[in-house]
Amino acid sequence: MWLCLAALVGLYYLVRWYRERQVVSHLRDKYVFITGCDSGFGNLLARQLDLRGLRVLAACLTENGAELLKSQTSDRLETVILDVTNTESIAAATQWVKEHTGDRDSGTLVNNAGISVPTAPNEWLTKQAFMKTLNVNLLGVIEMTLSLLPLVRKARGRVVNVSSVLGHVSMYGGGYCISKYGVEAFLDSLRREMSHFGVKVAIIERFKTAVTNSEMLCRGIQETWDWASPDVKEAYGEKFLASSTKIIDLLGKQCTKEVSLVTDCMEHALIACHPRTQYSAGWGAKFIFPMSHMPTFLADAMMFWGSPWPAKAL
Image 1 (cartoon, helix red, strand yellow):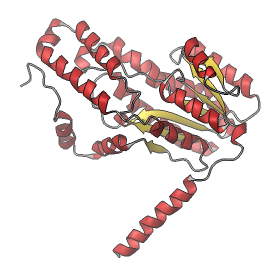
Image 2: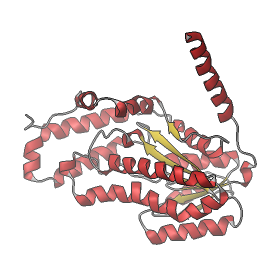
Image 3: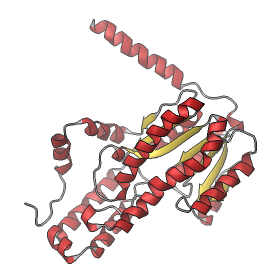
Image 4: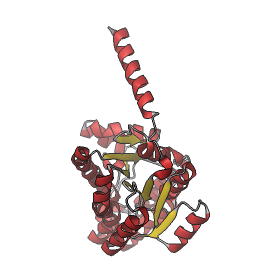
């Protein structure tokens, strides 16, 4: 019995390996629109796909980011300035994509733009702090997707979104984890709806990578502490702030330097004939994901282990 079971499991992985090695044809005729290409995953993916011969339409937030990317790539790559929190900017970028692709295959969107700050205990934050993150990471993703969705649907294309395992397990306060939970829900429903039209939707879940800027996170938590009320500061204490900053700095040093773990998953989701619906990029993501299925008391105990305690904690 066990031998048969092992044979079936082995056969499953062999078939999956074979299917996932198949790549779509005529890659040099394919257009891919990527947001957030100033730096990080978007920048690396744009260069990676350009080397493969795809026609990359890269959206950057700044002129400097766009110019730097163009200097590192071939003439095939085109750039546009895009602010995913601005409706007019999204509409202009959508029109720009239509003008550049014409009737050709323009049905691939990569939602990569995102921010991770401010991140801090929820009680330290304001509604505006939450909205800053949600406007980029969630509402920006939704509006950008809806704007390009008619093109994607007609081309029977793909929507690929960079997310995080923190969309399954909320490890800290602020809008980041909330936004990732929202992205997961949005793409789950979108995947089912678009499957009727032959559109493939994939999500890339990451955890700690080299683009996680610990210095920026430390600066962000210090700023939120400075804004906090005297009552909040008394409840948590300076020691809590110092310990939180130390943990963030330590996590930053432990981040995997192999950013390509994420971009390789993104590339596979774009060019494979049979892409996965969900990718876990790196062992960190694979380790954190099971926590979402654990009993609450056990997941909470793992979270509390090594975490700082407020000064007034019971």
